[in-house]
Length: 200
Picture 1: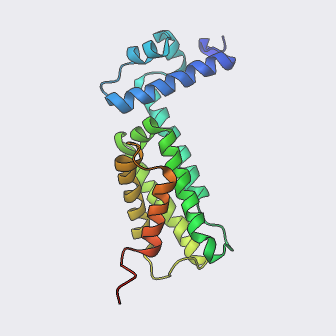
Picture 2: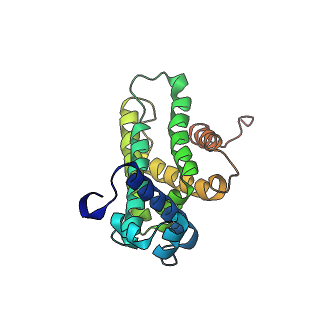
Picture 3: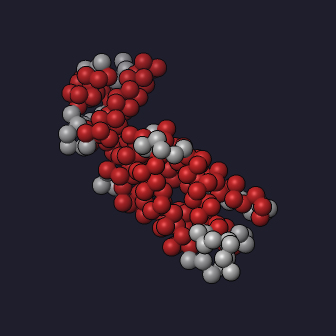
């Protein structure tokens, strides 16, 4: 036992990770108010005192899950910014790679995604912050000459966040489409539009 009775080492980390994973599933399936600590510990095969070694209360575990989601999402959004000097022909694949990474994170963490993107009271703030991060990316990318200078990057960023949220709900989480397929569809839409090439 370590500080304040916490289990130390791999065993303690396993217990804590298991509690987080099961809590995420419970919150995603049952909602915040219907999730009970007693259910979480029962499914984890642990005791309530063990839960309280790692988390002060139900809100603490929920907030940690929201924080985990936010941290990972913003890391992916930041790393999706296009580097300077990319050849124009490589742009679509570079953009697809960034979007695929985000959709893959959502697909691999469906409960965390439901919490952070849809359920938490902070979800709106997270989406607003994500749009701001994408706006910053686009401004830099515009300075590098990748996009038309007349484009309103805020509109593009807000649209992209809205598209991502809807496709997560309607296509990704139900398993209808894979991350790469969704990324391809978004890039085709945003870069090439929807007007038929046969007209005019």
